[in-house]
Length: 71
Length: 329
Image (cartoon, rainbow over all chains, first blue to last red):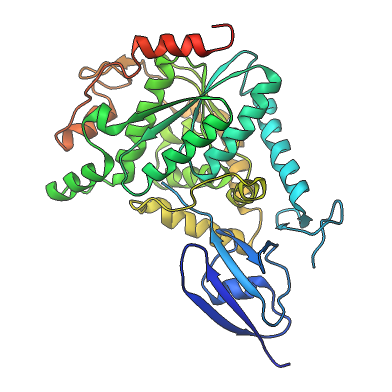
């Protein structure tokens, strides 16, 4: 398989984004693609909280939870 | 699947500053240990202290609420929770209901004081007044100055020995850099794990100061606390730029935040030498402590045609009810 397909959703926002990534990609790659800093988010992969260095597989669902609220 | 470097369970977090992977249990233990260590190292809480805890309903203050409640049960300190309602529609009102729920679950007294009551206007209206009058002063300055002042006043009226705030590593590092850039030595000097007692001011402590924001967020999620992750609609200004810059640096060079904090902590004891001694006076308008003739709160309020409404925020009746509710009261 030359690429894998994953879906990315930001918690609290409805929009679902599909990404095509190289098979060895980890979550950090998906965060970079979607313009998120690993310092400011927590990530759920298929419903579980995981480190951003976790490798991705075809069909994975990523949920990004922004944690920097401020105020 | 990545595994915890300590126990081999499924990892939830990669701590890039140390290179270790942590599972949910090890991360929770690690956060709790650093919270306890910070209190012990800097002697933040003495036995039988009455601690006023500033709780907004966000992740940091909710984590601190549970950590402090658990500590106070074991070490015999007294906890009061205070929420300042700045009057930010669709944001703070949601947070307050969460704080009420959490405080009730822990059996803690919860006091809410609003800008509306203290100054006759909430933050949303102050923002509109600034715009109407063409004043360039940032709304976050108003919020910070008015909130800190109210918190100090309420804590003092409730007889608190300390005010605990939920500033995390990221908040502290941003504040250090912000004050460097603004060349504000006086404010820089006030940062640190504890800002000791001066006349009219309750000492402030920061037990989460050495824990990164991300680890606190994970802690609240993993412990299943109900918190508000939404953003304040007024957020902006230089702090956001500094936050983004530091986060970019940290992503490329892990430990940047700790290095900034450690360097500041080494400099901090020498900052007092560079500052002029000043005597605390009373504000000529409101009577609150200030190094000037008029306090910063009254200065800011005057710009938008407002003033402090009440000298006392906690009534004698409320204080009496509070005394009776306390164990042994």
